[in-house]
Image 1 (tube, rainbow, N blue to C red):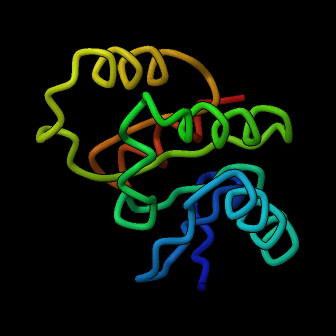
Image 2 (spheres, helix red, strand yellow):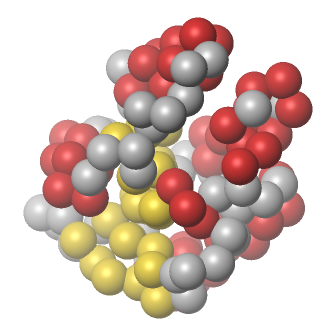
Length: 121
């Protein structure tokens, strides 16, 4: 896993990897701890391909458990990718509500994620 530091205040870590690194709550905690230790950033950007597909099936409860860890540890995350293939109304509503909050974002580009996280306090 590599990191690229972004943002106006250099407080956003773009996580660069080809692996699925968020599979469950423990792997999310491991990623949070590693990113904090390596970068000292509280705002993270990760590609959607690095998140297990089961995350996007809300009935599994995986998304809720993982995202609760980010909230508990006061970390902000933008998961970047194409969400157009998802037709589930509950998932679309979840993404919409998350994007209107102040901790978790599902965005289409890294540039959009940086803008959103730069304005998030």
